[in-house]
Amino acid sequence: MSKKMFMKADEVAELLDVSKSYAYKLIRKMNQDLKKRGCVVIPGRVDRTYFFDHFYGTGIKDSEEVADAGI
Image 1: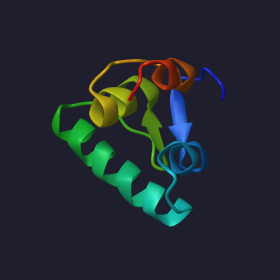
Image 2 (image 1 turned 90 degrees about the vertical axis):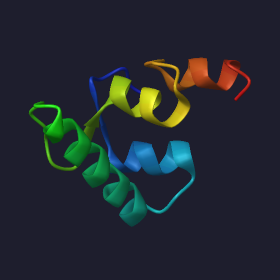
Image 3 (image 1 turned 60 degrees about the vertical axis):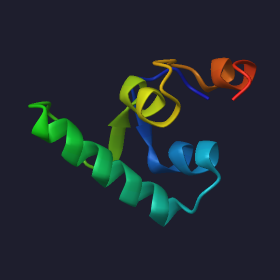
């Protein structure tokens, strides 16, 4: 996986083992939460750090580290 700042639905779907349409739904929800915090969001993408913190509570930026975290 790349180390880009934002994640697209394909990457979210792969990491969570969900469909691409469900990944878009999750991204929309996370982006709504970020908007409430005053952040600027990009439709169809989610900030990588926020994603890992939201799903794993780790703040880890790279999925390889999650695999090693024993989660």
